Length: 382
Image (cartoon, rainbow, N blue to C red; front, side):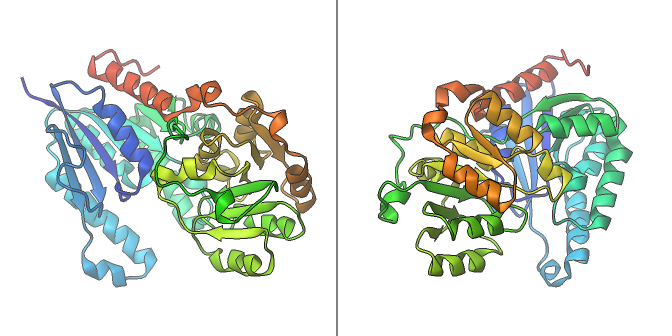
């Protein structure tokens, strides 16, 4: 009997895309001996078999060197065109059971695979793809057009928040949908190795220590946080990198309660930030995707045991109040200042056992159950 094939396609570097890698591990956990897994990605630099399984094949496309010299508006379409040719050349269309595509950039490939193999098509939208911040209007319109074009061929929609899933189902037509949160797994904070103690690093006493993680760019409330903490007795550490590095460093040079720490590897991020007191997630309403987001840094704060101060957006507010893990704030300077002054650990109880259903292990089980349903031919698209 011929082996059935599961295909994952992404236009990102899978070596750095933890969500996709974790999803693939979740699929591998439920694959039986009658199925193989093929993974197509761009310039991942991974080994031929990065998942240490004999029934997994990784196809890693490295764009030609000349692409690097092209302007962005030409470079990205050309790389995607070349990548599409690479996938179609190397993919065995026979016996494909599932084609799981990550984001809109490769949705057309999922459509082609489905047409030629009669496979199920899973569309994994890691954000609200056509409504993202720092995305050109033309790119957004093309993305929306592609989603509309291929929507009727999608069998399962996966995304990162209920709000984003509802947007898709109401904007197009309702699909079988699955919420997979961008969360880490539970961490034994006591046993983690090579962890930085932020409080010791900055020789802090009993001051409130806040931490902000993620890309340091506009749209994340960083400019307001700098203004607030420049007039505060509390301390904040920014972990990450981005275009606002220099701005944060300039504040750090002038104010001894504002700190910029270097990027921390993903595998020690949660235990590292656990040495702070509170996490801050003040993303701004710069796009519908941001407004409906449940970013991974929010869950990283929770699994580090940190109460959170977050934007009063629908999804963030729902989870924060439901699980009683922190407080919400308006995004003006006065509200944020009041929030950091009033937040107290005595008012919340962030305990890993209380948020187990938000952990990656719980998300992995949900994705595994979907694949078991598909692999056992019990798939119901309702």
